[in-house]
Structures are given as C-alpha cells and as structure tokens.
Length: 493
Image (cartoon, rainbow, N blue to C red; front, side, top):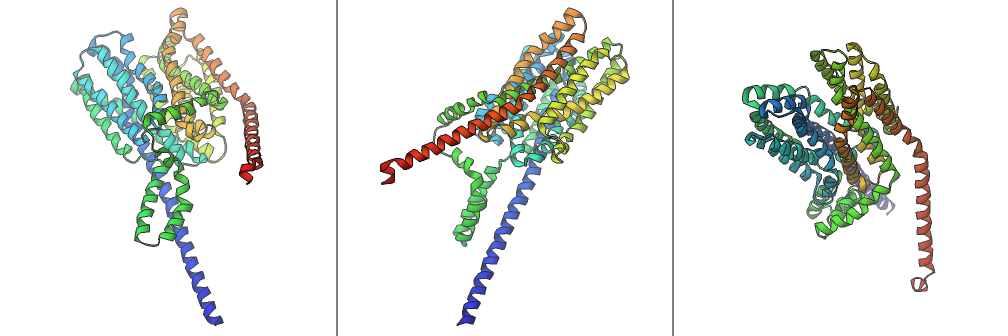
C-alpha cells in the first residue's frame, strides 16, 4: 500500500509539473507574440507616416507650383499647407472622442481614405479656392485622423523605458520621406503638371492601408486570445486552459469588456465626454500642453523664417536650400536619440523636454547675431537634432502622467491648442518683419517663450504634493464609507 500511495503521489506530481511547464511555455509564447506585435506596429506607423506626410514635406515645391498653375498671389498659395497643418492638430479632440466608439485601426483607415481622395480630387480643380478646401481642410482632416492616436498604440505596447525609442523610430518615417517625396513629386509635376501629380500622389497614399491592417491594441489581441481559449475548451482540457486564460489574458481585457457594454454610441460618447472633460483641471495636463504648444510654435516658426532670414543676412538662395537638407539629415539622425537616452536611464522624458526647450531658447538668442553660412549650417544641424527628437515627445509625457482612459482625449485636446496657435503665427511673424523690417525681435521673443515654458516645470513638486493629498483624502473617504456600512444594523444583521 505505501508503494502504491507513493506511485500515485509521484504521478500526480509529474502531472502537476507538466501542467506548470505548459502554462509557463504558453505565457512565454504570449510575451514573445506581444513583443513581435510591438515591432510590427512600429513598422506600420513608420510606413503610414512615410506615405501620409509626403505632401507636407514637399511644401516648398507645392507653394511655388500653386503660384504658377493658378496664377495666384504668394499669400493665397501659402494657405493650403498652412491650413492643413492647423487642421491636423485641431481635429484632435474629435479623434479622441471617436476612439471611445470605434477602434483606432478604423479611424486610421478612414483617415487614409479621406487624405487619398482629397489629393486625387485636385486633378479636377481649376480654382485655387477649391485647392485650399481639398488640401487645407480635407487632407488635413484625413492626416489628423491617421496620426493623432498612433502614439497611443505605441505607448500601450511598450514599457515606459522603451516608448521614446519606439516613437522615435516610428515617426522617422516622415523624415525619411523628406528625402524621397520632394524629388518624386518634382518629377511628376514636370511630367504630368500639378494636377496630374496630385492624382498620382493620392493613389500612392493608399499604400498606407498596408500599415493600417496591423494596427491593433493589446486588449484586442487579448480578446482574440480568449476566443481561441474558449474554442479550445470545447475541444478538451477546459479546466487547464480556462484557468490559464483567467490568470494571463483576462485581466488585460477589462477595458475591452467595458467598451462592449450594451449602450448606444451616443450615450456612451456623452458619458465618456463628461469624464474626459475633467482633464482640463489636471495640472499635469495644463503644464504639458503649455510646454508642447510653446515648443511646437517656436519650432515651426523658426523653420519657416530661417531661409528668408539667411538671405537677409547675405546668404545666396541656392545655399539656403542646403540648410534645409542639413536640417533634414539631423532631424532623421535625432529621431531615435531620445529613446536611447531614456532606455538607458540617462534622462527622463520630462528632462529631455526641459533641456530641449532651454536649448531652443539659446539658439533663438544667438540667431540675431548669426551672419556667416558656416554658423547658419551649424545652427541648422543642432536645431534639427533638437526638434527631430522632441517633436513627438508630448504624447509620451501624457501617457506617463494622465489617467489611462483620458490619454487619447488629452492628446487630441493638446493638439487642438497647437492647431489654434497656427493661426497666430502669420500675424506674429508680420508684426516684426513688416513693422521693423527684420526678425531680431521675433527671435528674442521666442527665446523668452522657450525659457519661460521650461521654467514652469519648477512647479512640478507642488503638483506631485497636491496629487498625494488628494489621493489620501480619497482613501480616507473610502475608509469612512466602509466603516459606516459595517455599522449599519441592516448590513450587520
């Protein structure tokens, strides 16, 4: 009998070890699959940005061709791409609300179709006003739908120390496109004129759909895993597989289950809007948004005026074009640099934003004294290193400091304020250039803006202290509520 009991015990132990081994291998397989899907998403976002931002990266070419094709003024010719940039940002809050109703993959797919159709329809346009509507509004709308929430996918898929690197690689697609699209569109314009080039480019944008096919959130992948687990339960081993999925997969799909609650999209949208609007009162949201608005406002303004300022300083027009090439090269090089610094724990994303803002302010203070081509080239290279690596860092800081359910809306709302400042840029430039005849006052003003936005982060300790106090107050309320329930005679009975 003892031998028999020992045999049974050994057999049960062996079966238990086998089950543990199978569970462990299953979990490891899920982890490997998650890592593979993260790399796929990086490649997909890279490809989408490469295809979608070709028109914006060829802005100088389109600007000149509009004047030639439609015989319009330079002021009118500057509107399509300027309005497109504002539309990309201002659609942000709407995209944040749409995410509560439909998947990010569906939003990106619709954005690609709208951007493609708006460019292709320019083939039948013979008035610059319609070109402004198609490119400034519809193309901007489609591109905004496509690119606003892709950082959310990247931030959800990667741990905090890898997010900056993943975003840097993904968003370098637009930088790589700057070495391809201007030359391709210039050749298309020569061969087929501006309308024909826009028709062909509209068709080429559809290649971005290949990247949209694989854009899936972690909860969507986990939900499919549960369905596969249920299918296997019907075949056999239901207890083992069911318990395995209970431990490894189901905790990650709570958000997906909430989204599947049976309620109308309108009611769901109103409820989530009420919750999301509370992000206005979050001090971190206010601080991050102010920093992002100031950084991007100065970044784009310097990029617009630097060529004209170089020519005012005696630099030949042909040489100023090389400044843009230098900027593009350094912009591409800098995309993965912030990720490498944060991954190795040299700096945090907040520290990178603060250092970058201060450095941009210093460059703005130096620019009024720059006169030689060598110094312009050095500044263009340093400026590209700063802006290329930090232009996408705002969504990452939102992800680190804002409630997870509010992140998509917070990113969209932050982009909305960035878009509003785009309308302030032309008069801001005109005040200095038209009134004083130079850009010196503009550069000094932007230097002050950069330093001031960076100094606001000195208030972060106060924000952290306030958050801790509010959490303690909420915990005390919960404890008091639990105590009152226990003292209720009906509950104790």
